[in-house]
Length: 90
Image 1 (cartoon, rainbow, N blue to C red):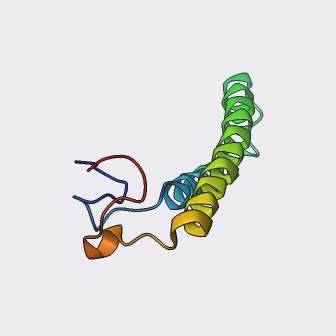
Image 2 (cartoon, rainbow, N blue to C red):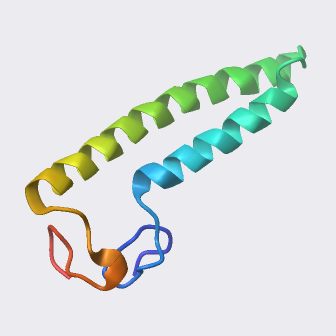
């Protein structure tokens, strides 16, 4: 069973891109709180966060692309309604 992602046994789960966008939003809010802290440690953390945000944006693009491929090939997911997975095995 998946903990966060929607699946045949977790109809209350989320799409991957939705989770990643929520994480990105939280990170941006947190970055806003340290943007004016010019200590070396804060600058180091901000630099790391900026790299992570870029990676998250790339991951969101890939996850959205996968959803679009599945939607075009098999139609919208019916997992939330207890439907079968569109690919893979249940």
